[in-house]
Amino acid sequence: MNKADAKSTGAAGNDLPEWNLDDLYPGMESAAFREDLAWCAEASQAFEVRYKGGLEALAKDDPDGLGAAIADYEAIEERMGRIMSYAGLLHAGDTSDSVRAKFYGDAQEKITAASSHLLFFALELNRLDDKVLDKAMAAFAALGHYRPWLADLRMEKPYQLDDRLEQLFHEKSVTGRAAWNRLFDETLTGLSFTVDGKQMSIEQALDLMQDRERERREAAGREIGRVLDANGRVFTLITNTLAKDKQISDDWRGFNDPADSRHLANRVEPEVVEALVDAVHAAFPRISHRYYRMKAGWLGLDKMEYWDRNAPLPHMPEKLFSWEEARSTVLDAYDSFSPEMSQIAGRFFDRNWIDAPVRPGKAPGAFSHPTVPSVHPYVMLNYLGRPRDVMTLAHELGHGVHQVLAADQGALMAQTPLTLAETASVFGEMLTFRRMLDQSGDTQQRRALLIQKVEDMINTVIRQIAFFLFERRVHGERRNGELTKDQLGAYWLEVQGESLGDAFTFDDSYRAYWMYIPHFIHSPFYVYAYAFGDCLVNSLYAVYQSAESGFQERYFEMLKAGGTKHHRELLAPFGLDASDPAFWSKGLAVIEGLIEEIERIEETGKA
Image 1 (cartoon, rainbow, N blue to C red):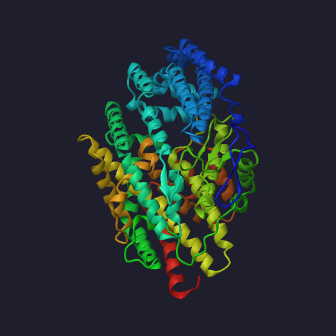
Image 2: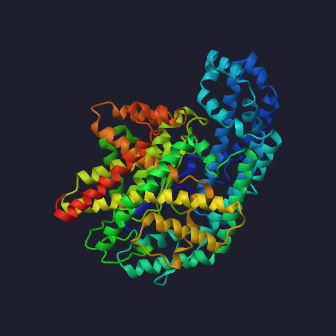
Image 3: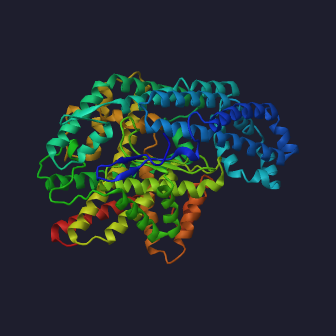
Protein backbone atom coordinates (compact mmCIF):
# COMPACT_ATOMS: atom_id res chain seq x y z
CA MET A 1 0.00 0.00 0.00
CA ASN A 2 2.83 2.42 0.86
CA LYS A 3 5.64 1.11 -1.30
CA ALA A 4 7.54 3.33 -3.68
CA ASP A 5 7.65 0.76 -6.45
CA ALA A 6 3.98 1.36 -7.23
CA LYS A 7 3.75 3.43 -10.42
CA SER A 8 0.97 4.92 -12.49
CA THR A 9 0.99 6.13 -16.06
CA GLY A 10 0.21 9.78 -16.68
CA ALA A 11 -1.38 11.64 -19.58
CA ALA A 12 1.99 12.44 -21.11
CA GLY A 13 2.87 8.75 -21.31
CA ASN A 14 5.27 8.72 -18.38
CA ASP A 15 5.48 6.68 -15.21
CA LEU A 16 4.38 8.79 -12.27
CA PRO A 17 5.60 8.18 -8.72
CA GLU A 18 3.45 7.32 -5.74
CA TRP A 19 4.60 8.32 -2.30
CA ASN A 20 6.20 5.98 0.18
CA LEU A 21 4.70 6.65 3.61
CA ASP A 22 6.98 4.19 5.41
CA ASP A 23 8.97 7.08 6.89
CA LEU A 24 5.87 7.78 8.98
CA TYR A 25 4.71 4.19 9.63
CA PRO A 26 5.22 0.92 7.75
CA GLY A 27 1.50 0.14 7.65
CA MET A 28 -1.91 0.59 9.23
CA GLU A 29 -1.49 -2.59 11.25
CA SER A 30 2.12 -1.93 12.21
CA ALA A 31 3.31 -2.30 15.79
CA ALA A 32 4.94 1.15 15.55
CA PHE A 33 1.59 2.82 14.84
CA ARG A 34 -0.22 0.95 17.63
CA GLU A 35 2.55 1.71 20.10
CA ASP A 36 2.59 5.42 19.26
CA LEU A 37 -1.18 5.62 19.57
CA ALA A 38 -1.03 3.99 23.01
CA TRP A 39 1.90 6.20 24.04
CA CYS A 40 -0.04 9.37 23.14
CA ALA A 41 -3.00 8.29 25.28
CA GLU A 42 -0.77 7.49 28.27
CA ALA A 43 1.60 10.45 27.90
CA SER A 44 -1.18 13.03 27.58
CA GLN A 45 -2.92 11.76 30.72
CA ALA A 46 0.36 11.70 32.65
CA PHE A 47 1.13 15.24 31.44
CA GLU A 48 -2.20 16.49 32.75
CA VAL A 49 -1.68 14.82 36.14
CA ARG A 50 1.83 16.24 36.44
CA TYR A 51 1.28 19.83 35.38
CA LYS A 52 -2.37 20.85 35.64
CA GLY A 53 -2.83 23.58 38.22
CA GLY A 54 0.92 23.96 38.78
CA LEU A 55 2.11 26.28 36.01
CA GLU A 56 1.98 29.47 38.06
CA ALA A 57 4.23 27.94 40.71
CA LEU A 58 6.64 26.73 38.02
CA ALA A 59 6.78 30.17 36.42
CA LYS A 60 7.63 31.81 39.74
CA ASP A 61 9.86 29.19 41.37
CA ASP A 62 11.18 26.90 38.60
CA PRO A 63 11.19 28.54 35.15
CA ASP A 64 13.46 25.81 33.80
CA GLY A 65 10.80 23.35 34.92
CA LEU A 66 8.24 25.33 32.94
CA GLY A 67 10.54 25.19 29.91
CA ALA A 68 10.78 21.41 30.39
CA ALA A 69 6.98 21.21 30.56
CA ILE A 70 6.67 22.99 27.20
CA ALA A 71 9.27 20.62 25.73
CA ASP A 72 7.23 17.65 27.00
CA TYR A 73 4.09 19.16 25.50
CA GLU A 74 5.88 19.66 22.18
CA ALA A 75 7.02 16.03 22.13
CA ILE A 76 3.45 14.79 22.61
CA GLU A 77 2.14 17.18 19.96
CA GLU A 78 4.76 15.94 17.52
CA ARG A 79 3.85 12.28 18.06
CA MET A 80 0.15 13.09 17.62
CA GLY A 81 0.98 15.02 14.47
CA ARG A 82 2.87 12.05 13.09
CA ILE A 83 -0.12 9.77 13.64
CA MET A 84 -2.62 12.14 12.05
CA SER A 85 -0.30 12.94 9.15
CA TYR A 86 -0.08 9.26 8.30
CA ALA A 87 -3.82 8.67 8.63
CA GLY A 88 -4.64 11.83 6.67
CA LEU A 89 -2.25 11.09 3.81
CA LEU A 90 -3.53 7.53 3.49
CA HIS A 91 -7.09 8.85 3.36
CA ALA A 92 -6.20 11.52 0.78
CA GLY A 93 -4.67 8.82 -1.42
CA ASP A 94 -8.08 7.12 -1.74
CA THR A 95 -11.02 8.66 0.09
CA SER A 96 -13.35 6.06 -1.43
CA ASP A 97 -11.59 3.19 0.39
CA SER A 98 -13.77 2.29 3.39
CA VAL A 99 -10.82 0.69 5.21
CA ARG A 100 -8.76 3.86 4.97
CA ALA A 101 -11.76 5.99 5.87
CA LYS A 102 -12.35 3.97 9.05
CA PHE A 103 -8.65 4.06 9.90
CA TYR A 104 -8.61 7.84 9.51
CA GLY A 105 -11.80 8.30 11.53
CA ASP A 106 -10.63 6.01 14.34
CA ALA A 107 -7.26 7.76 14.54
CA GLN A 108 -8.96 11.14 14.64
CA GLU A 109 -11.23 10.07 17.49
CA LYS A 110 -8.39 8.62 19.56
CA ILE A 111 -6.08 11.59 19.06
CA THR A 112 -8.89 14.01 19.88
CA ALA A 113 -9.55 12.08 23.09
CA ALA A 114 -5.87 12.09 24.02
CA SER A 115 -5.34 15.75 23.18
CA SER A 116 -8.27 16.77 25.38
CA HIS A 117 -5.92 16.09 28.32
CA LEU A 118 -3.57 18.77 26.93
CA LEU A 119 -6.15 21.53 26.53
CA PHE A 120 -5.54 22.93 30.00
CA PHE A 121 -1.91 23.74 29.18
CA ALA A 122 -2.38 26.65 26.76
CA LEU A 123 -5.31 27.98 28.78
CA GLU A 124 -3.36 27.91 32.03
CA LEU A 125 -0.27 29.45 30.40
CA ASN A 126 -2.40 32.35 29.24
CA ARG A 127 -3.63 32.96 32.77
CA LEU A 128 -0.08 33.62 33.96
CA ASP A 129 0.80 37.22 34.77
CA ASP A 130 2.73 38.88 31.91
CA LYS A 131 5.43 40.24 34.21
CA VAL A 132 6.04 36.86 35.84
CA LEU A 133 6.32 35.12 32.48
CA ASP A 134 8.53 37.82 30.94
CA LYS A 135 10.91 37.68 33.90
CA ALA A 136 11.13 33.90 33.70
CA MET A 137 11.80 33.92 29.93
CA ALA A 138 14.50 36.55 30.27
CA ALA A 139 16.35 34.59 32.93
CA PHE A 140 16.15 31.00 31.68
CA ALA A 141 17.22 29.91 28.19
CA ALA A 142 15.13 26.73 28.18
CA LEU A 143 11.98 28.79 28.56
CA GLY A 144 13.20 31.73 26.46
CA HIS A 145 13.57 29.39 23.47
CA TYR A 146 9.78 29.23 23.33
CA ARG A 147 9.25 33.00 23.51
CA PRO A 148 7.82 33.27 19.95
CA TRP A 149 5.36 30.45 20.60
CA LEU A 150 4.30 31.94 23.92
CA ALA A 151 3.87 35.37 22.31
CA ASP A 152 1.63 33.85 19.63
CA LEU A 153 -0.26 31.89 22.25
CA ARG A 154 -0.99 35.03 24.25
CA MET A 155 -2.54 36.65 21.18
CA GLU A 156 -5.29 34.03 21.55
CA LYS A 157 -5.96 35.02 25.16
CA PRO A 158 -8.86 37.47 24.54
CA TYR A 159 -10.75 34.75 22.66
CA GLN A 160 -10.29 31.88 25.11
CA LEU A 161 -13.22 30.29 26.88
CA ASP A 162 -13.12 28.58 30.24
CA ASP A 163 -11.53 25.16 30.45
CA ARG A 164 -14.70 23.08 30.36
CA LEU A 165 -16.11 24.93 27.36
CA GLU A 166 -12.82 24.59 25.51
CA GLN A 167 -12.86 20.86 26.22
CA LEU A 168 -16.43 20.58 24.96
CA PHE A 169 -15.60 22.46 21.74
CA HIS A 170 -12.55 20.25 21.24
CA GLU A 171 -14.22 16.89 21.85
CA LYS A 172 -17.33 17.78 19.85
CA SER A 173 -15.19 18.68 16.84
CA VAL A 174 -15.00 14.98 15.89
CA THR A 175 -18.77 14.84 15.41
CA GLY A 176 -18.96 18.46 14.27
CA ARG A 177 -16.68 20.32 11.88
CA ALA A 178 -14.30 17.41 11.28
CA ALA A 179 -17.18 15.10 10.38
CA TRP A 180 -18.66 17.60 7.92
CA ASN A 181 -15.21 18.09 6.36
CA ARG A 182 -14.89 14.36 5.88
CA LEU A 183 -18.38 14.15 4.37
CA PHE A 184 -17.45 16.87 1.89
CA ASP A 185 -14.21 15.11 0.87
CA GLU A 186 -15.78 11.71 0.45
CA THR A 187 -18.79 13.08 -1.42
CA LEU A 188 -16.69 15.12 -3.83
CA THR A 189 -14.19 12.39 -4.64
CA GLY A 190 -17.00 9.87 -4.98
CA LEU A 191 -18.68 11.83 -7.79
CA SER A 192 -18.51 10.42 -11.31
CA PHE A 193 -18.59 12.56 -14.46
CA THR A 194 -19.31 11.25 -17.96
CA VAL A 195 -17.88 13.15 -20.93
CA ASP A 196 -17.82 11.69 -24.44
CA GLY A 197 -18.96 8.38 -22.99
CA LYS A 198 -16.05 8.16 -20.55
CA GLN A 199 -16.44 8.13 -16.78
CA MET A 200 -13.93 10.24 -14.85
CA SER A 201 -13.14 12.03 -11.59
CA ILE A 202 -13.67 15.74 -11.02
CA GLU A 203 -9.94 16.40 -11.59
CA GLN A 204 -10.10 14.79 -15.01
CA ALA A 205 -13.31 16.59 -15.90
CA LEU A 206 -11.87 19.95 -14.84
CA ASP A 207 -8.79 19.24 -16.94
CA LEU A 208 -11.01 18.90 -20.04
CA MET A 209 -11.97 22.55 -19.60
CA GLN A 210 -8.47 23.29 -20.91
CA ASP A 211 -9.05 21.20 -24.04
CA ARG A 212 -8.49 22.73 -27.47
CA GLU A 213 -11.92 21.62 -28.70
CA ARG A 214 -14.56 24.06 -27.51
CA GLU A 215 -17.29 21.43 -27.78
CA ARG A 216 -15.38 19.19 -25.39
CA ARG A 217 -14.80 22.07 -22.96
CA GLU A 218 -18.49 22.85 -23.04
CA ALA A 219 -19.45 19.21 -22.54
CA ALA A 220 -17.12 18.94 -19.54
CA GLY A 221 -18.29 22.26 -18.10
CA ARG A 222 -21.97 21.37 -18.36
CA GLU A 223 -21.39 17.87 -16.98
CA ILE A 224 -19.54 19.23 -13.96
CA GLY A 225 -22.37 21.69 -13.36
CA ARG A 226 -24.99 18.95 -13.77
CA VAL A 227 -23.35 16.51 -11.36
CA LEU A 228 -22.60 19.18 -8.74
CA ASP A 229 -26.16 20.50 -8.97
CA ALA A 230 -27.57 16.98 -8.60
CA ASN A 231 -25.62 16.74 -5.33
CA GLY A 232 -26.43 20.29 -4.33
CA ARG A 233 -28.61 19.29 -1.41
CA VAL A 234 -25.62 17.73 0.38
CA PHE A 235 -23.18 20.54 -0.45
CA THR A 236 -25.72 23.19 0.56
CA LEU A 237 -26.33 21.47 3.88
CA ILE A 238 -22.58 21.17 4.54
CA THR A 239 -22.05 24.85 3.73
CA ASN A 240 -24.97 26.03 5.88
CA THR A 241 -23.95 23.83 8.81
CA LEU A 242 -20.31 24.86 8.81
CA ALA A 243 -21.11 28.56 8.38
CA LYS A 244 -23.47 28.38 11.35
CA ASP A 245 -20.93 26.35 13.32
CA LYS A 246 -18.34 29.08 12.67
CA GLN A 247 -20.80 31.80 13.68
CA ILE A 248 -21.50 30.06 16.99
CA SER A 249 -17.80 29.64 17.70
CA ASP A 250 -17.01 33.24 16.71
CA ASP A 251 -19.82 34.62 18.86
CA TRP A 252 -18.75 32.65 21.91
CA ARG A 253 -15.12 33.67 21.46
CA GLY A 254 -15.86 37.32 20.76
CA PHE A 255 -14.75 37.66 17.15
CA ASN A 256 -16.64 40.56 15.57
CA ASP A 257 -16.00 39.68 11.93
CA PRO A 258 -16.20 36.19 10.35
CA ALA A 259 -12.66 36.57 8.93
CA ASP A 260 -11.08 37.77 12.20
CA SER A 261 -10.19 34.29 13.44
CA ARG A 262 -8.34 33.62 10.17
CA HIS A 263 -6.47 36.92 10.47
CA LEU A 264 -5.45 35.97 14.01
CA ALA A 265 -4.27 32.53 12.88
CA ASN A 266 -2.32 34.18 10.07
CA ARG A 267 -0.83 36.73 12.49
CA VAL A 268 -1.79 39.49 10.10
CA GLU A 269 -3.69 42.65 10.94
CA PRO A 270 -7.22 42.98 9.51
CA GLU A 271 -6.34 46.38 8.02
CA VAL A 272 -3.47 44.80 6.05
CA VAL A 273 -5.85 42.25 4.52
CA GLU A 274 -8.44 44.95 3.90
CA ALA A 275 -5.84 46.99 2.01
CA LEU A 276 -4.98 43.92 -0.10
CA VAL A 277 -8.63 43.13 -0.87
CA ASP A 278 -9.43 46.76 -1.72
CA ALA A 279 -6.42 47.04 -4.02
CA VAL A 280 -7.26 43.83 -5.89
CA HIS A 281 -10.96 44.67 -6.08
CA ALA A 282 -10.12 48.06 -7.61
CA ALA A 283 -7.81 46.32 -10.10
CA PHE A 284 -10.48 43.98 -11.53
CA PRO A 285 -11.07 46.25 -14.58
CA ARG A 286 -7.36 46.92 -15.16
CA ILE A 287 -6.32 43.27 -14.98
CA SER A 288 -8.93 40.55 -15.47
CA HIS A 289 -11.51 42.55 -17.48
CA ARG A 290 -8.77 43.92 -19.72
CA TYR A 291 -7.09 40.55 -20.25
CA TYR A 292 -10.24 38.55 -20.92
CA ARG A 293 -11.47 41.04 -23.52
CA MET A 294 -8.20 40.32 -25.36
CA LYS A 295 -8.67 36.60 -24.94
CA ALA A 296 -12.21 36.72 -26.33
CA GLY A 297 -10.78 38.35 -29.45
CA TRP A 298 -8.05 35.71 -29.77
CA LEU A 299 -10.72 33.01 -29.58
CA GLY A 300 -12.87 34.81 -32.16
CA LEU A 301 -15.75 35.21 -29.69
CA ASP A 302 -17.94 38.20 -28.89
CA LYS A 303 -18.53 36.71 -25.47
CA MET A 304 -16.81 33.85 -23.68
CA GLU A 305 -18.49 31.24 -21.53
CA TYR A 306 -16.98 30.03 -18.27
CA TRP A 307 -15.58 26.96 -20.01
CA ASP A 308 -13.46 29.27 -22.18
CA ARG A 309 -11.65 30.91 -19.24
CA ASN A 310 -8.68 28.51 -19.26
CA ALA A 311 -8.94 27.52 -22.92
CA PRO A 312 -5.67 27.23 -24.88
CA LEU A 313 -5.39 29.78 -27.65
CA PRO A 314 -5.59 28.89 -31.36
CA HIS A 315 -2.23 28.25 -33.01
CA MET A 316 -0.46 28.50 -29.66
CA PRO A 317 1.67 25.43 -29.00
CA GLU A 318 0.81 23.60 -25.80
CA LYS A 319 3.50 21.17 -24.80
CA LEU A 320 2.76 18.18 -22.59
CA PHE A 321 5.58 17.67 -20.12
CA SER A 322 6.73 14.21 -19.20
CA TRP A 323 7.46 13.68 -15.52
CA GLU A 324 11.21 13.81 -16.16
CA GLU A 325 10.83 17.06 -18.09
CA ALA A 326 8.77 18.57 -15.30
CA ARG A 327 11.35 17.49 -12.75
CA SER A 328 14.31 18.94 -14.67
CA THR A 329 12.44 22.16 -15.47
CA VAL A 330 11.71 22.89 -11.82
CA LEU A 331 15.01 21.69 -10.37
CA ASP A 332 17.04 23.63 -12.96
CA ALA A 333 15.07 26.78 -12.13
CA TYR A 334 15.65 26.26 -8.42
CA ASP A 335 19.34 25.56 -9.03
CA SER A 336 19.77 28.85 -10.90
CA PHE A 337 18.67 30.61 -7.72
CA SER A 338 20.36 28.35 -5.17
CA PRO A 339 21.94 24.90 -5.54
CA GLU A 340 20.88 24.14 -1.96
CA MET A 341 17.25 24.86 -2.84
CA SER A 342 17.47 22.48 -5.80
CA GLN A 343 19.13 19.79 -3.66
CA ILE A 344 16.37 19.95 -1.05
CA ALA A 345 13.67 19.79 -3.74
CA GLY A 346 15.51 16.90 -5.38
CA ARG A 347 15.00 14.76 -2.28
CA PHE A 348 11.26 14.75 -2.93
CA PHE A 349 11.88 12.96 -6.24
CA ASP A 350 14.75 10.74 -5.12
CA ARG A 351 13.10 9.51 -1.91
CA ASN A 352 9.51 9.14 -3.13
CA TRP A 353 7.96 11.97 -1.18
CA ILE A 354 5.61 12.80 -4.09
CA ASP A 355 2.31 11.21 -5.11
CA ALA A 356 1.66 12.38 -8.66
CA PRO A 357 -0.94 10.34 -10.61
CA VAL A 358 -4.66 10.91 -10.91
CA ARG A 359 -6.51 7.94 -9.40
CA PRO A 360 -10.16 7.14 -8.70
CA GLY A 361 -10.99 8.25 -5.17
CA LYS A 362 -7.85 10.35 -4.75
CA ALA A 363 -8.37 13.79 -3.20
CA PRO A 364 -8.52 16.55 -5.83
CA GLY A 365 -6.05 19.42 -6.08
CA ALA A 366 -2.53 19.51 -4.72
CA PHE A 367 -0.74 20.15 -1.44
CA SER A 368 2.52 19.86 0.44
CA HIS A 369 1.90 18.42 3.88
CA PRO A 370 4.70 19.19 6.38
CA THR A 371 3.89 16.16 8.60
CA VAL A 372 6.21 16.69 11.61
CA PRO A 373 9.76 18.10 11.93
CA SER A 374 11.27 14.71 12.78
CA VAL A 375 10.15 13.26 9.42
CA HIS A 376 9.71 15.36 6.23
CA PRO A 377 6.95 16.81 4.03
CA TYR A 378 4.99 14.90 1.39
CA VAL A 379 3.65 16.44 -1.83
CA MET A 380 0.39 15.37 -3.47
CA LEU A 381 -0.39 16.27 -7.09
CA ASN A 382 -2.88 15.26 -9.75
CA TYR A 383 -0.37 15.44 -12.60
CA LEU A 384 -1.60 15.42 -16.20
CA GLY A 385 1.42 16.91 -17.95
CA ARG A 386 0.10 20.37 -18.77
CA PRO A 387 2.26 23.49 -18.25
CA ARG A 388 0.01 24.43 -15.33
CA ASP A 389 0.84 21.09 -13.73
CA VAL A 390 4.55 21.95 -13.95
CA MET A 391 3.83 25.25 -12.21
CA THR A 392 1.82 23.38 -9.57
CA LEU A 393 4.82 21.11 -9.02
CA ALA A 394 7.05 24.19 -8.63
CA HIS A 395 4.49 25.68 -6.22
CA GLU A 396 4.20 22.64 -3.97
CA LEU A 397 7.96 22.04 -3.94
CA GLY A 398 8.35 25.66 -2.81
CA HIS A 399 6.17 24.75 0.15
CA GLY A 400 8.20 21.59 0.66
CA VAL A 401 11.55 23.39 0.71
CA HIS A 402 10.11 25.91 3.17
CA GLN A 403 8.82 23.15 5.43
CA VAL A 404 12.17 21.35 5.39
CA LEU A 405 14.08 24.54 6.26
CA ALA A 406 11.67 25.53 9.05
CA ALA A 407 11.68 22.07 10.66
CA ASP A 408 14.55 22.97 13.02
CA GLN A 409 12.16 25.30 14.85
CA GLY A 410 10.37 22.25 16.26
CA ALA A 411 6.77 21.15 16.25
CA LEU A 412 5.44 24.24 18.03
CA MET A 413 7.22 26.88 15.94
CA ALA A 414 7.94 25.36 12.52
CA GLN A 415 4.53 26.11 11.06
CA THR A 416 4.35 29.42 9.19
CA PRO A 417 1.17 31.53 9.00
CA LEU A 418 -0.67 30.88 5.74
CA THR A 419 0.07 34.30 4.28
CA LEU A 420 3.83 33.77 4.50
CA ALA A 421 3.60 30.04 3.76
CA GLU A 422 2.36 30.94 0.27
CA THR A 423 5.40 33.18 -0.27
CA ALA A 424 7.84 30.31 -0.74
CA SER A 425 5.47 28.40 -3.03
CA VAL A 426 4.74 31.38 -5.28
CA PHE A 427 8.45 32.28 -5.33
CA GLY A 428 9.15 28.76 -6.59
CA GLU A 429 6.62 29.30 -9.36
CA MET A 430 8.17 32.65 -10.26
CA LEU A 431 11.67 31.15 -10.49
CA THR A 432 10.35 28.44 -12.81
CA PHE A 433 8.43 30.91 -14.97
CA ARG A 434 11.38 33.31 -15.30
CA ARG A 435 13.72 30.46 -16.16
CA MET A 436 11.39 29.25 -18.91
CA LEU A 437 10.89 32.83 -20.16
CA ASP A 438 14.65 33.46 -20.37
CA GLN A 439 15.06 30.26 -22.39
CA SER A 440 12.16 30.96 -24.77
CA GLY A 441 13.37 30.61 -28.32
CA ASP A 442 11.13 33.02 -30.23
CA THR A 443 8.47 35.70 -29.87
CA GLN A 444 5.52 33.31 -30.07
CA GLN A 445 6.97 31.04 -27.41
CA ARG A 446 7.54 34.07 -25.18
CA ARG A 447 3.98 35.23 -25.84
CA ALA A 448 2.64 31.80 -24.89
CA LEU A 449 4.59 31.81 -21.61
CA LEU A 450 3.43 35.35 -20.78
CA ILE A 451 -0.19 34.45 -21.46
CA GLN A 452 0.06 31.35 -19.29
CA LYS A 453 1.65 33.32 -16.45
CA VAL A 454 -0.94 36.11 -16.61
CA GLU A 455 -3.74 33.55 -16.48
CA ASP A 456 -2.09 31.84 -13.51
CA MET A 457 -1.69 35.17 -11.73
CA ILE A 458 -5.32 36.07 -12.39
CA ASN A 459 -6.32 32.70 -10.95
CA THR A 460 -4.08 33.27 -7.94
CA VAL A 461 -4.91 36.91 -7.22
CA ILE A 462 -8.20 37.98 -8.84
CA ARG A 463 -9.98 34.65 -8.53
CA GLN A 464 -8.91 34.07 -4.93
CA ILE A 465 -10.02 37.53 -3.81
CA ALA A 466 -13.32 36.88 -5.61
CA PHE A 467 -13.56 33.69 -3.55
CA PHE A 468 -12.91 35.76 -0.43
CA LEU A 469 -15.71 38.18 -1.36
CA PHE A 470 -18.04 35.22 -1.96
CA GLU A 471 -17.21 33.79 1.46
CA ARG A 472 -17.87 37.16 3.07
CA ARG A 473 -21.28 37.26 1.44
CA VAL A 474 -22.11 33.69 2.46
CA HIS A 475 -21.09 34.06 6.09
CA GLY A 476 -22.79 37.45 6.35
CA GLU A 477 -26.08 36.26 4.87
CA ARG A 478 -26.03 33.02 6.87
CA ARG A 479 -26.56 35.06 10.03
CA ASN A 480 -30.06 35.83 8.72
CA GLY A 481 -30.99 32.16 8.30
CA GLU A 482 -30.28 29.12 6.14
CA LEU A 483 -29.25 29.76 2.57
CA THR A 484 -30.79 27.89 -0.33
CA LYS A 485 -28.85 26.38 -3.19
CA ASP A 486 -30.30 29.09 -5.46
CA GLN A 487 -29.16 31.88 -3.14
CA LEU A 488 -25.65 30.50 -2.98
CA GLY A 489 -25.60 30.12 -6.76
CA ALA A 490 -26.75 33.73 -7.19
CA TYR A 491 -23.99 35.03 -4.90
CA TRP A 492 -21.48 32.95 -6.85
CA LEU A 493 -22.57 34.29 -10.25
CA GLU A 494 -22.61 37.85 -8.94
CA VAL A 495 -19.04 37.82 -7.66
CA GLN A 496 -17.74 35.89 -10.69
CA GLY A 497 -19.33 38.39 -13.05
CA GLU A 498 -17.83 41.31 -11.15
CA SER A 499 -14.34 39.80 -11.04
CA LEU A 500 -14.14 38.43 -14.60
CA GLY A 501 -15.92 41.25 -16.42
CA ASP A 502 -18.14 41.78 -19.43
CA ALA A 503 -16.16 39.43 -21.68
CA PHE A 504 -18.14 36.57 -20.13
CA THR A 505 -21.67 35.32 -19.97
CA PHE A 506 -22.62 32.71 -17.38
CA ASP A 507 -25.41 30.22 -17.84
CA ASP A 508 -27.20 28.26 -15.13
CA SER A 509 -24.80 25.31 -15.31
CA TYR A 510 -22.16 27.50 -13.64
CA ARG A 511 -24.32 28.23 -10.59
CA ALA A 512 -23.15 25.08 -8.79
CA TYR A 513 -19.40 25.59 -9.16
CA TRP A 514 -18.99 27.02 -5.65
CA MET A 515 -19.65 23.49 -4.40
CA TYR A 516 -16.28 21.97 -5.32
CA ILE A 517 -13.95 24.55 -3.71
CA PRO A 518 -12.46 22.72 -0.69
CA HIS A 519 -11.02 25.81 1.01
CA PHE A 520 -14.54 27.10 1.71
CA ILE A 521 -15.10 23.96 3.77
CA HIS A 522 -11.72 23.12 5.30
CA SER A 523 -10.25 26.58 5.91
CA PRO A 524 -12.73 29.48 5.76
CA PHE A 525 -11.12 32.67 4.43
CA TYR A 526 -7.87 30.84 3.63
CA VAL A 527 -8.06 32.03 0.04
CA TYR A 528 -6.69 35.55 0.47
CA ALA A 529 -3.35 33.98 1.46
CA TYR A 530 -2.75 33.13 -2.22
CA ALA A 531 -3.19 36.74 -3.33
CA PHE A 532 -1.11 37.89 -0.37
CA GLY A 533 1.71 35.54 -1.38
CA ASP A 534 1.55 36.38 -5.10
CA CYS A 535 1.66 40.15 -4.62
CA LEU A 536 4.37 39.81 -1.97
CA VAL A 537 6.50 37.64 -4.25
CA ASN A 538 6.16 40.12 -7.11
CA SER A 539 7.77 42.73 -4.85
CA LEU A 540 10.27 40.25 -3.41
CA TYR A 541 11.37 39.11 -6.87
CA ALA A 542 11.97 42.72 -7.89
CA VAL A 543 14.32 43.05 -4.91
CA TYR A 544 16.06 39.83 -5.99
CA GLN A 545 16.57 41.10 -9.53
CA SER A 546 18.20 44.31 -8.33
CA ALA A 547 20.13 42.84 -5.37
CA GLU A 548 23.90 42.74 -5.79
CA SER A 549 24.51 39.94 -3.31
CA GLY A 550 23.17 38.31 -0.18
CA PHE A 551 19.58 37.90 -1.29
CA GLN A 552 19.64 34.10 -1.23
CA GLU A 553 21.01 34.08 2.31
CA ARG A 554 18.32 36.52 3.51
CA TYR A 555 15.64 34.50 1.72
CA PHE A 556 16.75 31.25 3.38
CA GLU A 557 16.84 32.95 6.79
CA MET A 558 13.25 34.04 6.21
CA LEU A 559 12.19 30.46 5.42
CA LYS A 560 14.15 28.98 8.32
CA ALA A 561 12.34 31.28 10.76
CA GLY A 562 9.13 29.26 10.39
CA GLY A 563 6.52 30.77 12.69
CA THR A 564 8.95 32.57 15.00
CA LYS A 565 8.69 36.02 13.41
CA HIS A 566 5.95 38.45 12.34
CA HIS A 567 5.64 39.43 8.68
CA ARG A 568 7.11 42.88 9.45
CA GLU A 569 10.28 41.29 10.89
CA LEU A 570 10.62 38.85 8.00
CA LEU A 571 10.19 41.41 5.25
CA ALA A 572 12.24 44.21 6.81
CA PRO A 573 15.62 42.84 5.56
CA PHE A 574 14.26 43.18 2.01
CA GLY A 575 12.99 46.73 2.55
CA LEU A 576 9.36 45.61 2.20
CA ASP A 577 6.34 46.45 4.38
CA ALA A 578 2.99 44.72 3.78
CA SER A 579 1.21 47.24 6.02
CA ASP A 580 1.89 49.99 3.44
CA PRO A 581 -1.16 50.19 1.10
CA ALA A 582 1.17 51.11 -1.78
CA PHE A 583 2.88 47.73 -1.34
CA TRP A 584 -0.10 45.90 -2.87
CA SER A 585 -0.32 48.31 -5.81
CA LYS A 586 3.31 47.54 -6.65
CA GLY A 587 2.58 43.81 -6.68
CA LEU A 588 -0.45 44.26 -8.93
CA ALA A 589 1.56 46.51 -11.25
CA VAL A 590 3.74 43.50 -12.09
CA ILE A 591 0.69 41.69 -13.50
CA GLU A 592 -0.33 44.80 -15.44
CA GLY A 593 3.21 45.00 -16.82
CA LEU A 594 3.00 41.46 -18.18
CA ILE A 595 -0.35 42.26 -19.84
CA GLU A 596 1.23 45.34 -21.42
CA GLU A 597 4.05 43.21 -22.80
CA ILE A 598 1.50 40.86 -24.37
CA GLU A 599 -0.25 43.88 -25.90
CA ARG A 600 3.04 45.13 -27.38
CA ILE A 601 3.67 41.73 -28.96
CA GLU A 602 0.14 41.79 -30.41
CA GLU A 603 0.70 45.25 -31.87
CA THR A 604 4.27 44.90 -33.16
CA GLY A 605 4.83 41.17 -33.48
CA LYS A 606 8.02 41.59 -31.46
CA ALA A 607 8.88 40.83 -27.84
